[in-house]
Length: 394
Image (cartoon, rainbow, N blue to C red):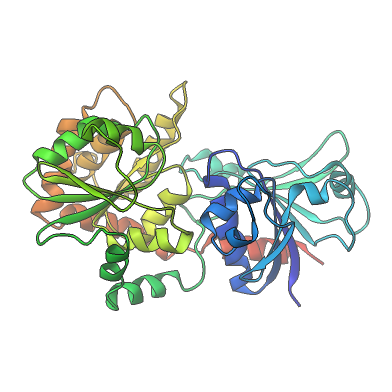
């Protein structure tokens, strides 16, 4: 019998929070141990990346339906459970990224002989301290509610990384069956002979103007598939005009194409179809790993510079056993820091060093493959969360 589980999601950072929670819910459903319900405060945001919801939302501005079933996941709006709903309680409550349950549910968590198991799913981090905090239990002093903290991370001492069953098989089958060519043609992004394809998804603070200039002057022709959002203004400035979706424009050796909104499967396939991916935040960062090709990651920018601590922690994990003087690792570090706005690194020279190694040999790509292969061998977040619950449920 499947275990009822609620995942509580609050949309804070555009599509990232909804995206992670939706992937987790679908992954748990696919693993068949749980019967997941995604409780989300802004279902219309989820509808933007899940088109099977969108046809039911009606006119612009209307809310998504309060109860929808997709891929074994029930989707309901947070407002529908603000007061005690009909039916029984789930066995497990997951508060994603600190989202508090409604008052009535919090009361149930604090008492009763069969209160739900309450998990706090935190943001993904490579910092060492999460290993000591993972799986700790805190008892709330106000009402004695017990919360269990799960910290996703890049080591076996963390909650692991979100990865659905059969992901790598689907990726490899997609590539083997000519999926990249078909997808890029649909997106008006079929590369010209000798032209490499990259994807771009970033925050507004990414150094796009200088990077665009480097691509335009580069010896290798490049087609950049630009996701909507923060890159659009920089692209418009570079071109001197807006670029409509599906239209291509060129400056020197660089060409750009604006992408339509993609669902999660479509975005995964885009990453699988490119030779380099620029990603941000959490969801696209992790999906770039599973593509198995070189990428640059932009951490969520923080005014106090805390994102550089997170970046350095990640780079240290990614380095594995290579010496700090390793040229591939130095190229990766310089580009990541320049991309994240560290003034000690110039994006021009950082990209030139990175791009030279990207084009000249397999060493840089091999470094990424080695890192990703080490993560593929680890137990996934889906499996670890499942086992954690089974060990604690009666």
